[in-house]
Each structure stands twice: as structure tokens, then as C-alpha cells.
Length: 138
Length: 138
DNA sequence: AGTACTTATGCAACTTTATTGCATGAAATA
DNA sequence: TATTTCATGCAATAAAGTTGCATAAGTACT
Image (cartoon, rainbow over all chains, first blue to last red; front, top):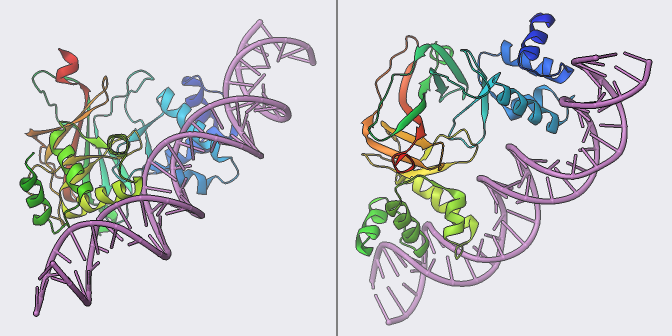
């Protein structure tokens, strides 16, 4: 993606423009899937592991990416598609996890149904679908 | 819970009856919330960490408990309420995570809506609701 | 009950994942 | 371009989970 666009995104989120952040941000934008910390490490060996972890933290704190629940034990992250701000991530889209290739996709076009439970205050809901994704199906 | 009931559950799932398994199983049944590995470790210091991990694995493998997706990075587990078998865990109930007390509850009475996506094969779906739970609200 | 077989446990070591402190280097602001 | 603020890399550490192996305990059979 064009450099100025990437820089603009960082500036919008009050983040300093650094090589690492530009590379990681571009990688997130290019990717169709959720990205694990390990994937970042293998992709960007030029940067220290610690730097990559801190990049992820700054991105999640500022609302550029969001963490995706996964019972496999290690975290994955995806771009925030909708209007997210640092205080309130609202991701009412569906996450799809393929049981064949292991990839996690965001499906922004599918929205999470509204649920209400008496006695409970609902902040946001996440819908994770497990199955076989489009590319593994074909 | 009565000892014979606990033993019966283990036998049903082809698991040997041991002190550790009886204690952990009872703990899961007593608990209203999802249980983290750390909670097990602090609760059952009498057993080795490794034994507790292996107990969790045998319970998940045999369909007694299921892991619950959580973006916090470490796994939690809850009792299987419905008809689960070792091959296919179907948990079409809702998991509620309280942003105040951090506890995760299973809400077996609330079912996950059926979703269909063209091109995708859906195996099962998980609905995680974040908010404030009943006891923190009152 | 006793024996043989199978499996669980505890210990030690190790791997993986993530965090913290600190000195240095780079980015922003004026 | 000087100054301030923040990001980076390195080292060390913490936390989470796994593996191998000897021993102990559970199960099945007679």
C-alpha cells in the first residue's frame, strides 16, 4: 500500500512513524487472515521479537487491530474494519476459523446478531465460526 | 457432589478413577464459571502442574470439558453441558465474559443462532458476549 | 486376594510465549 | 538544529505448556 496512506493511519492514531510499524501495518492490510505473533516473528526477523510485541500492543491500544479469541492458546490479531476507537472496540463482524488450514478470517459482511440477557449488561459480542473456509472447500 | 456420581462420569468416559481427576471434576461441577489452568494450580497445589495439565487434556479429549476461546491468551475450560462426545464437541450455548470480575460463564439457556455463509462449510459456532455479569450488576 | 498389565503421577528438564529494565537511537515539536 | 519524547534492541526474567522417564497406582483376570 502506498506509503503516505500507511503514515496517515499511524498519525491518525497518534503513533510515531517508524519502519517497524509501517511494515507491520502494511502486512496486516495485505493479509486476508488474522495474524499470529509467530507469523510476525517469522515474517519480520529483521526486528526484535520485543519490538514486534510492542508494535502489536500499540496497535491494539490505539484501535488499529483487535485481538481475536481463540481456544488454541495463543493470540491472533486482525485489522479493525469498522469504526474503532481506543476506548471501545466494536467488532460486530464474524470471525471464521478454518479447521483445515487453521487460518482465521474476518467476515465483515456478516454481522453478529443482537442478544439480550436479563440481568446482564452487554458491551459487545463475538461470533466465531469453525468450519472449512472457501479456499479449502474448492 | 457424591463420590459415586463423579466416579460414574469418569467411567462413562473411559477414564481411570484417580484422586486428582475426582477433585478436578468436582471442582468443575461446583464452579459456575469457566476455569483457567492457573486457577486449577492454585486450587490444587497438592498435585503437580503437569498432572493438572494432563487431567485437563484427558477431560477435553473425552468430552467432559471444553476449552473456551478467550483473547486474553490463556485457555479456560468449562463443563460440557449438552451431549458432547469425544469426536464432536457441539456447544451451541453462549459464553459470557464479565469485563469487571473477569469470570467467564456458560449460559446454556441461550443458544447460538444458525449462520450460513456461501462457500463455507460450518462445523460449529461460538458466541462470546462481553459485558457485566449478573452478580457484578447487582 | 494376588498377579500381570496398563495407565497416571511426580520430578526434572526444556520449549514456547510474553514481559520488563535500561541504554541507545530515532522521531516529533518548536 | 536543539530538545524532548518515545521506539528499539539487548539481556534477563517470567509465565505457560510440553516431554521423557522412573515410580506408583488403577484395572482386569484368575
